[in-house]
Length: 210
Image 1: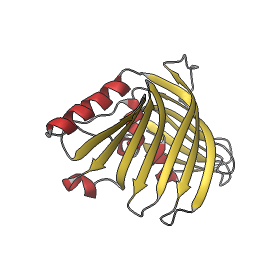
Image 2: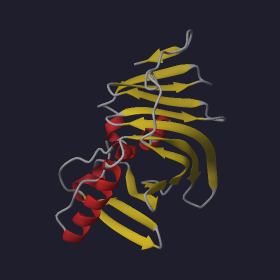
Image 3: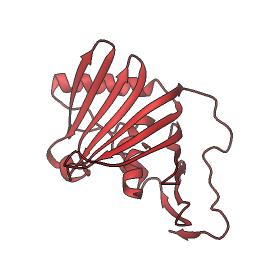
Image 4: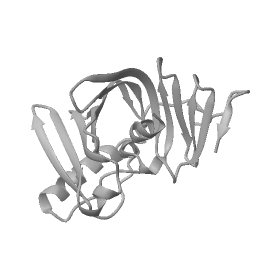
């Protein structure tokens, strides 16, 4: 679960890069501009996991706050009862039911996540192909790893959905044919976030794994 949480937390850097192909390059630049325009996010989400046969495996709700660069507070409600927090250098993954906190460096894990796109992490170089479908005010951007990038990330396809200038959802297809969807609600762009939102102190008595 920590692996999937990292992929989506928050979702937080696997992120698409600009390609040489003119059409794809322009779409990638457009997507980058959308995220670059926002420094902070706050909202709620529903995360759904569908297996390769189309069966619902899991559905969970949660809340999140993000701030560039690399600040994350991503909380899964029951039945997962998990929280992912990054202060920009250290990342804590807290599983309340297991009474365990896993501690890692942000550079080691968070920056390998497609959710890093929410924080504007857009590295230089090729390896991804972009498409966009537009219907009325909705834009669906699809990002597909190509070439050597296919062996460096654990996903087959990432779709980012915007409704007008509002982020609506993310859809991820992994190498096992499973689909994970995040549907956002109550999204706030550049809200005022409380001081200390992105710090975490492990509760007394829990196991800390480094």
